[in-house]
Image (cartoon, rainbow, N blue to C red; front, side, top):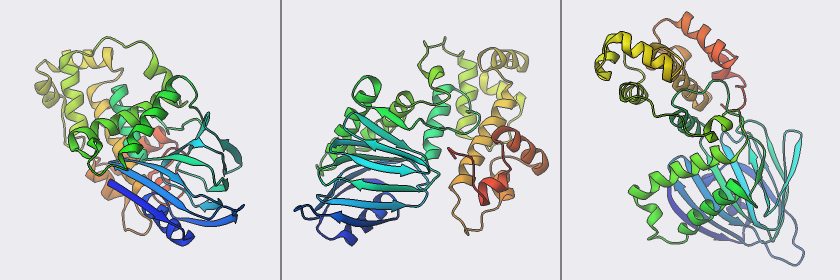
Length: 327
C-alpha cells in the first residue's frame, strides 16, 4: 500500500470495511456506548511495506481477526487496548505497546472509546529482507518478535516517536513523507527501528559494536547476489565481479561472512523462495517447483532437503499448510 487516507464515519460497518481495506478483514461491534457515540477517525499512510494508522473509534468496540499475515504493532497514545493472540492475553497502554505475529487469530476484547492507537502493519518478507541487509547474510530459521514493546523509554520510545511523526503526515496531503525520495528512507527506518527495538534471536548481533567493514570484493559480490539471486552464478563469475581470484574470494568469504560464496548464493535463494511461498495466496495455482525454479534451484530433491534443513519444514508445508511462525 502507498499513499494516504483520511476517514471519518459514525457507521460501524463502514469502519470495518475501511480497516479491512487498509489492514485486515475483521468483525467489529460496539460493546457499550457509555454515553459516547461511535465516531471512527482513521488517518493512514502507506510507505511501501509498512502501513501506519492513527486510529480511534469513540465508543468501546470488540473486534475479531483471522491470521493477520503480517507483523502488527499497536501503540496506544491514550486509553487501553485489551487483546489476545492465541492463548496470550495482553493489554496495550501508552507505556507498553504490543507486537502481534503474522500467524494466530487475534481477538480485541475491548478497544476503549478513549483509546487512540498507533497501528503499524509490517510485511514479513520486507522485514526479513531488511534483516538480511543488516546482517549481511540470509537469516536462518523463522523471525519471531517479542510480544512486549516498552515505549516509555529507550529504543522503544524513540521508535514510537518516529511512528507518530509518520502518522502526522497522513493528515497532510502535501506532507514530505509522500515524496519518493523521503518515503523509502522512512520505510527503511521503521523496519530497522522495529528490528532494533523488539526482542528476537538476532537482536544482540544487530546491537553489538559494529564489526570491521567487509572488504570491497566481498561487498560487491553480496550486493550482486542480493540484486539477482536467481542468476546462475559460478565462482568464476563471482570472482570476476569481485575483481579478485576465486581462491582469494573463497578465503575472504569464509573470513568475513562465515560461508563460501556459493553457500551465500544458496542462502539468499532459499530466503527469497520461502518469502514467495509464504506470500502465495491459497488457490492461486502456485507450485513449489515453479517458485524453486524461478529462484535458481534446478534440482528439486536437493532443494527440498536444504529447505527442510534450513526452515524445519518442507516447501509444501509452507505453501499449503501452516508455516512456522515468522513466515
